[in-house]
Image 1 (cartoon, rainbow, N blue to C red):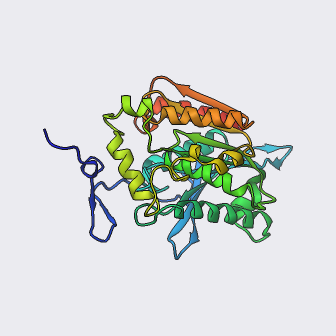
Image 2: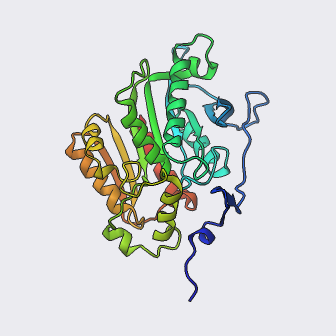
Image 3: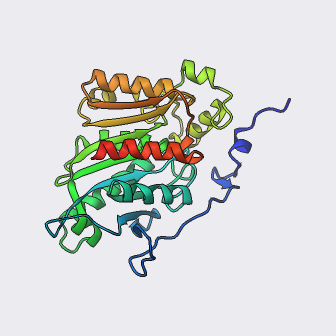
Length: 320
């Protein structure tokens, strides 16, 4: 029997300089721009550079029809979105991410700033958290700049900012929300955080990890490799970036988080950790809404449109 190779499973080649060659090319969708709106088009999009040196940028999604109240434009909640991909894959322009945010922007309705953060292992943690903070500071700058981005200055309610992430994106959201507790981000208010299938770990195996160790999509050797590629050199899976549950300072700060929605599925090897995270938050006094389903697996929303729609509905209810 051949030995399981997580690189082969992920269709990656490890280069001598520590970078990766990614053998799967994911389809990309360009931003629409504001001109030439097509019949039936519900959302327009544009890309804005965050930091040219880091090659980070955001894609902004805006509903074509903005609701109005007594002829006054209603300001919309802002969702800052952090995509999944195990730290190593995808961009916000990848078709699955683009389509998903397109639907969410229209259905909520909301302005969405999807953050194209740097990927591992070319950039190790906490680089991704730094990119998230850069994006949040960019939003903060727009909120007070009369010459700021018009989509932001005209349509966003800066008192209703939501941080939403899937898988490693949910990890970024949690760490960013903990970081900004000690920062002055006014006039922004984080009105809630949304953690969908958060990617967290630890050295000691949980029951669900052991039970689902040979999971078809997300087996343990793959999860271990993703952490090896993302964590700072010389650290292990009990580092707070991976295992927030083992860090006393993180635990104490958690009590200062606002409203939180956590979504998870019973067939995800990480389900035990996700439920433990919810328990810890509740113990610290956080207002948590937990939506766990026994049926489903990690990243099910990428292959099951009905489940993707259900997740969007949870998010919509939480925001509205």
